[in-house]
Length: 455
Image (cartoon, rainbow, N blue to C red; front, side):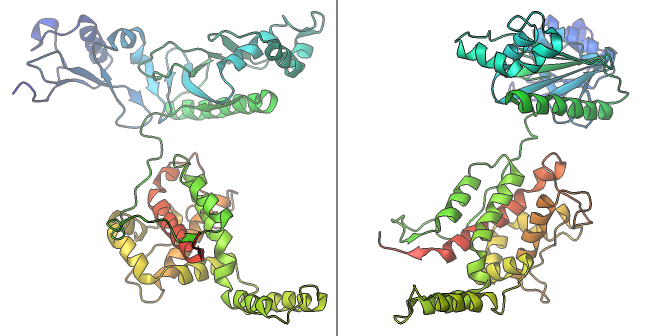
């Protein structure tokens, strides 16, 4: 039974009371956690080797537990974890005793050397000695160009210090140590250290970090094209759901006998590559539908134009005849359809109700999520049993509602229930089920709009 995992809480334990031989560093960390009133426990196969020490640090949310073992004990022992408040889902914490905030940031465009080059330029070493700080800082663009065009390599490690003329707050960006038990183990990342921060709670610290970090990020992006992003803890990243299919898996794979509208298929394949950015993925899949919906929301007009253009008597050089085509198209029965109605007609035309029913039956969690009366995500609910509104229309309305919540990010959003849906909100990570739906609909629209071919 040596492999049996056990959870043993030892609130008053001493070295001699331990039922195993543990690393002294772990024992010291355990005692520090107890004295600080932090929940902690030993977890693991007690009879074979020292188990892992689990510690729950203070945080702005519940459930943030850190595993401390022999591999990371040394680095964990060095940090003042008793004073740390972990800031939400970001790789960040607030030291409430020292009034400092630390967070890990990633370079999305540029790298650490770009920041150290800015630091060197601000020092004035490459600028006009008589120009003063303002002139040197104002000419950083040309200085940076000189630094990189000269072939000089900036060091991998360095720092960039930003100070305020109006307060004691100081921001330092620097190369982090190789490992940090709270801020992660990304050797290419950057640490942002904010000093003399006047906040009273973890929530205030989170808001302050977001505000000042993004102000710094915007300035660096605006002036030097260096784009930074606060790193997130594992679990915050959007985890896309996989669609369950109940047909076609056992059929032999053949060379497809259809081709697709080039822009629409390019949009769809692009959407399949950005599955960690749910709002962008949703809007891109909506564009697939949007690209095709004029053809399906006004089929009579399309057929009429097609017939007239195929008429052998039609003269493409006859401007009067062409103007009559334009006139008939402009005055069609669906000429002034709203976008919502265009989405409805497209889904009704391309996706039979039984296909939607089959999809929902195969993806029952998605079906349950979108049928909730509380309108999760502020979009219209979908009830297959509702006889007053056809299923394709219900799906279309939900898709359009979600599109409006993402696009209309102003304060007086069209949807008063949920307001705008922003990428920084927790709701963004709930888009998985709606992404499954819009992906399924986009696939059906692509298939319906495909052109048969023999290649």
